[in-house]
Image 1 (cartoon, rainbow, N blue to C red):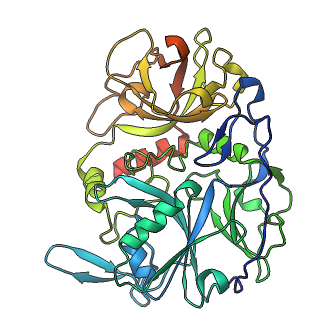
Image 2 (spheres, rainbow, N blue to C red; image 1 turned 180 degrees about the vertical axis):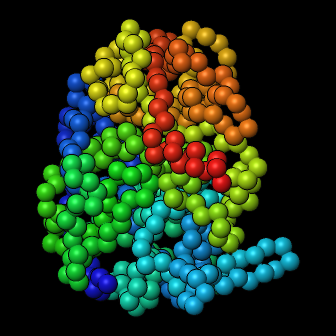
Image 3 (cartoon, helix red, strand yellow; image 1 turned 120 degrees about the vertical axis):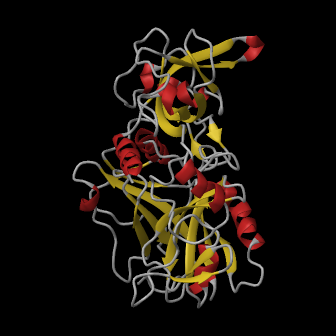
Amino acid sequence: MPPPLARGALLRRPNASSTNAGVCRSCRRRLATTASSAPPKPPAAGLAELSSRRVLAVAGADATKFLQGIVTQNVAAAAPGNGRHQQATTTTTTTTIPSEPRIEGFYAGFLNATGRVMHDTFIYPFRGGGGSLLGSDDGFLVEADASQTARLEKYIKRYKLRAKVSVRSLAPDEVSVWQAWDDNGGIDTLSLPSGPDSRVITLRDPRAPDMGHRILQLGGGGGSAPNIIGVERASEDAYTIRRYLQGVPEGQEELLREQALPLESNMEHMHGVDFHKGCYVGQELTIRTKHRGVVRKRILPCMVYDADRPAPQTLAYQPDSVASVVGGAAAVPAETSIGRFEKRGRSAGKWLRGVGNIGLGLCRLEIMTDVVLPGEQAAATYKPDDEFVLEWGGEDDVKSSVKVKAFVPDWLRASMEEGQKR
């Protein structure tokens, strides 16, 4: 159990370099503006500070019960003695009454009343008092998009009513967010900090098999990074590239606020939705889509490439493969429609965000992939030889374009196939 926390300075963010002209202000990720200055390939074993993420402290006697009613994952552990949560039944609903909070952290979403994603978060239970962060109460540290923490705090307070819950946004020098990975020896070989004096909270990232570990560095660490042996200090761009290669969306520019649906965003396959818990905000549409609907669009990793090049066969980070557009994938405007190359017809999806030659897109599975949807014998309109294009307007009505190809990660394909068997 971590010791009581003390407020203190941690890491001081370096000033943005004058060479990094393309800066995403909303989430503070520094992205390159030309193909030649695109970020290098990420190291096989790395540790990156995520300045695009911030933390809220939610504490109080009702914190577990309160969060249980507004997030997509189960906040509570099984009730002692029977292995199940106690349930309170009304004439219309059955609501899980949480007993004790979970010990380990988890991935979850906050939805609006219509089931659209408001915030994607990691939630870390904290017991035994949190010093200056949580006071004397048990509670949770909620990690979210740094540009949206004020909105998330307002969202939580909207549902607070008379619940005995306090909410406070924490400064980066109180809690900083990190990601560690090791592609050489595997995720379990990382020598993560532990013990009462480590002043960190760690979580194995559940979203995809090779994502690594999430780490919260608590205040008072003396300005140093978490002490992990055998990893290279990396930039946040390196983490972003790894996310894109895994097909893992994060933040409001990829999980579009009040537009994205949790199932189209793969949140159930990333262990962010519990379909067996009690009611929560936005549950009705989510559970109806799960049991009655077919998810025809999903966020997938994509590669962009020049029109005179053959379509790539494997997903790889190769920023030099996009020479026709200054900035490569980072230059493609968000929500640009994906169309069939030299063909007319309905949109095949929309672009979300990218860097170098890779990124994420919301793709129609039956058009852009060979995935067979439930109730269908084959991918309805998919043709292996089809190519797809992103086109957008430039200055003086000069249009820019690149071709784009979507890939279905092995972990996502396996999870979707397993889900269809249930």
